[in-house]
Amino acid sequence: MVGPMSTTEHEPQLALADTISGPVVDAPGVPAARPLRAWQNAALEKYFDPAREEPADYLVTATPGAGKTTFALALARRLLDSRRVDRVVVVAPTDHLRTQWAEAAHRAGIELDPTMTNAVGPVRPDMKGYVTTYAQVAGHPMLHRARATARKSLVIMDEIHHAGDGLSWGEAVFEAFADARRRLSLTGTPFRTKADERIPFVAYVEDDSPESEGGLRSAADFTYGYKDALGDGVVRPVVFAAYTGVSRWRNSAGEVVAASLTDATTKSVESLAWKTALDPRGDWVPHVIAAMDERLNHLREHGMHDAAGLVLASDQDDARAYAKIVQRVTGEKPALILSDDPKASQKISEFAESDQRFVVCVRMISEGVDVPRAACLAWMTSYRTPLFFAQAVGRVVRSRAPGESATVFLPAVRPLLALAAEMETDRNHVIPPPASVSSDEVDEGGLDLLPPPEREPGEKKEYEALEAQAEFAHVLHGGKAVTGGELPPVSVEEADYLGLPGLLSPEQTAALLSQRDAEIRKRTAVSRPVEEPGPEPAEPEQEDAAWHTAALLRKEIHGLVGRVAAGRAMPHATVYSTLRKAVPGPPSASASVDVLRRRRDHLLSMV
Image 1 (spheres, one colour):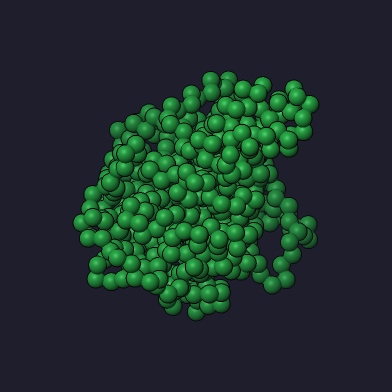
Image 2 (cartoon, rainbow, N blue to C red):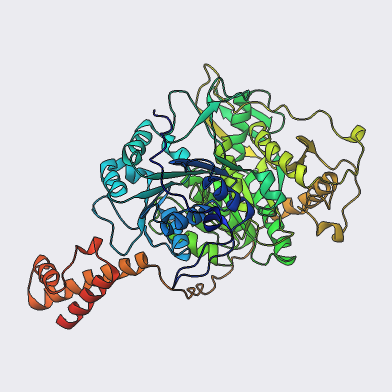
């Protein structure tokens, strides 16, 4: 794989005051931009540092929820306004994020088309650029190269680590954008790689962490971590509530094996205990769903009236089963979002704007998707990589108001506890919990934080899940398990502060969660009546982005062509040819909104 590219030719620089101070300057007819956060201004200041040549490549690592999209569009706006670039190309991981990027760009006064396919040639003249996916770039890199070099372009690569999902993707990204004028790469957390699998346009340093085994780690030009964001009030503090339980399964020899999530002896036993706990036929999943439902009730009664919970599943079959469990335990039907659902993007947008309490998904909401009202996450998946963990937890940490907090419910297995401990350490560095007990009274046994489980040599794959029970285990504090010990019951007044580090001690938080566990156990055995679905949420009133208007017009034109063809006994191709002669311009896929409107009106006159 290739390494970072060299700097492009030096371009005239604007005065520092013209490029980084205050909010983005608003253009006529463009919605007012909100002021940038301190870290975003600092990252822009470094980019436009007059003491050095402006970079051709710039990597920003900013914790999920910090506002990477806003920063990228602010940079794009400045480069466009100063004529350093004439076009913006955004590469996103998923189709839904294409729409999200286009909507954010529209609010920033930059019209980007998220509907372009590889079958369409030039970018429409009324667009400043377009949004595509890594998969589309890999499908036709030379097409994207032509688009990115036809004009001076800024290429924004969102979650750049996706260019390492396969050697062909990285090679395609390099082939498509190596000659672009400028490139901005974004990621939510530093990523590791092997020496022979470098992602293009990224600089690397030797990784000296214990798990690296001599690999490389990405070196960002600007870094804004969770600890920094928490100190600035940009993200919420997270409380990790770990749940243990005994899992039972039958191995390939027909023997019944039982093990606790917390006390599993080997990596393979731990993996099978974890897998069994996540089986929807057991009791572990309903128990944790009920615990999260209890937390959402509390949040909604104490200021966060629209608080929502995300249930993250390993695959689509589990997701469908978990959705039924949510409905049985809570009495409410959750949103179910699967990657093969053609309406997945629409469902995500509807959930983000609705008052619905639960959404069950596989990976559709694990990365980049903005649902600020989500405050709870149930980790019911076998994913365990640091990158995925940070991205998924990032869905519930975006802060909207002071005093909000996030809660992550997870299996008490060592790989996840190790990842949670890293974030928890950052949280306590900024908001240290009160020291209500002496160090002598705290369990010093700690946690044996082993690397992610691997299949042991000779282990057979055949296995049958039998059952699993759940029980609150502990909250994390200082990398250790805090159970609450023999503390007296927590009062109703103290319960209001659950989840706010600095107000309740770790022991009090653990005592409260343990206190509620018995009642939750009863709830999981009783089915609630299912609520009747309420009215559909009203569509928000806002001006449509140009790409959205164009898509609607193209659909309308297609229908009108069919009506004209049927009424006049003409082939569709003849109607389209007549239409192009009457209203000259490029094909509909590349035509501007103005041309499409005139073609629509002409067809109406023919009906």
